Length: 243
Ligand SMILES: *[C@@H]1O[C@H](CO)[C@@H](O)[C@H](O)[C@H]1NC(C)=O
Ligand SMILES: *[C@@H]1O[C@H](CO)[C@@H](O)[C@H](O)[C@H]1NC(C)=O
Image (cartoon, rainbow, N blue to C red; front, side, top):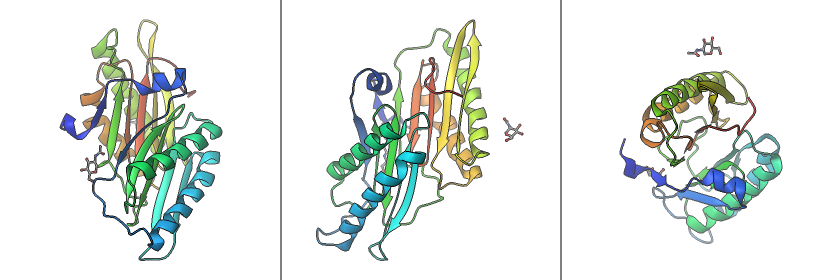
């Protein structure tokens, strides 16, 4: 796993986002063709954005296809499990703006935004529902090293594997939990998938990020978040979600 394939961010955005109203986004539209300005695809995409903006906040997940081939567009949006429906709504709206600014006239794109939590927005002319997307991924690392980094990393890894397993068995495809590390020190975690995935693929998605990204980005750190096109992982040394 090469570091350069992942956007590395030294500023730890979650903490910032909780302290100040700061929206943050990262996107990828690098592998995608363009549609023409007067193409019906553009209108279908606008309708998809409206649909996902309405559909996502109540359940924190939305999925839709709009139009007919060859101008059909498929998309989904996901908000982190601890987000309120109103923060999710703002996050998705900002993601829609961000994806239009960063990837104008692109046939497919993905954006991760942060507004009191992480949200993901993704669309494509190719139907991708049910397929694990770990091609697209970013991480955010808390630059502070944990007090006992080896123990902390080991316990974090164990907790996230357990949460991955639990997520895959639940209809909402997420699980949260905590684990004693040493003394009074605890680690808190979240594992979550987009709900187009089958349970077994959710587990595959999360286990892959735990095995390939987590050691590079976040081992021994006080916190970290890994986000792909299909699942997300987060751990912190403070409570950010109730189990
Ligand atoms: C962006 O997409 C390209 C093509 O699919 C992929 O190779 C690359 O790793 C992606 N980058 C990120 C940050 O997800
Ligand atoms: C995975 O979850 C199932 C129940 O959903 C449980 O029986 C099993 O022990 C778990 N495995 C691990 C490794 O945690």
